[in-house]
Image (cartoon, rainbow, N blue to C red; front, side, top):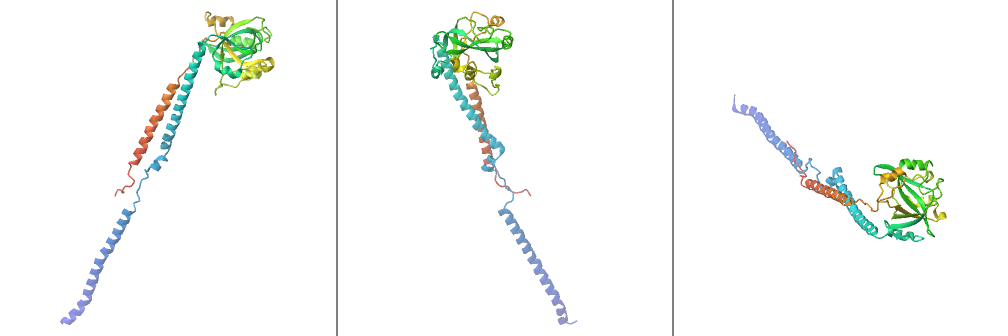
Amino acid sequence: MSRPFISSLSAPLRRSIVSSKKSSISKPCIRFNSTSSTFTSATTQPKYTTKNTLRSQLLRPTTLVLICVPILTGFLGVWQLQRLQWKLNLIEEVDRNLQKQPMLLPDNINLSALPEFSFRRVILRGKFEGPAILQGPQTKDGFPGYHLILPFKREGSGSTILVNRGFITTTRATAIREKRQAVPGLSEDGFTGDGKTYELEGMLTKSGEKTFFTPPNNPQTNEWFWKDLINMTQWVGGEKRGVQPVLVDVIEEPDTAPTFLMNQGIPVGRPPHVELRNQHAQYAGIWLSLSASTTVMLAFVLSRGKGAPKTRRPKL
């Protein structure tokens, strides 16, 4: 077999081998380029991110509660401090008035100046009139009962005021309401006085305050749950009878036991001193301490959120 014939047969084989080598070399380049572009896009545009920014922390329910609680408790603490100052001024005023000698009330009392004489001891002389007001229920020394309030016509040209004769038991109050027993200081009809002139030592007091749990008064049925001085004055006659909205509490007799007076059906007066509870300093300390502690908790939560990483790589 001649050499030209062999070369003619091997030429197509060489061309096929060369073309296969070129194709095998070019394919890895294409694969590397696609892989490189995919890795680059994955690193430049991360898909795994966290949102622990300050704004996201503030919008969490726990953070919102921690923001509101210090503000509310701080406001309550400041309010209790204001109430503390008011209570201290009131105690000072009460002590100052109690140390003064008893005074005689003028014939016509100036109602605008009356608050300046609160808890001042006074001397009264006159006669009781009806109708009777039973204000309660109340308790005294563990016994349930009511306060007996009557109009008091002062001697001479003095106006009529309201006088709280004192505490009577529930049994006595029920008998008076059912008209089975006469009112102390009145006749059996319950409207006119017993004809006696009384000289009393009492204390000027303010009108009562209705709380959220106190039922409303019902003048039609003569049920008085709190000392509504204006409506009480109108109920007993008001200006038509010359009754002024002034209330005086009779001071108890120091030499007689209250239980003995209760058994005899005699009203028990109030003590000659005033006890005012003052716990506003404790309440203010509680509220302000809660405000400080919740403020520290809020600062801790916000500072912990700032140090958190914003991005992270996925685990392979």
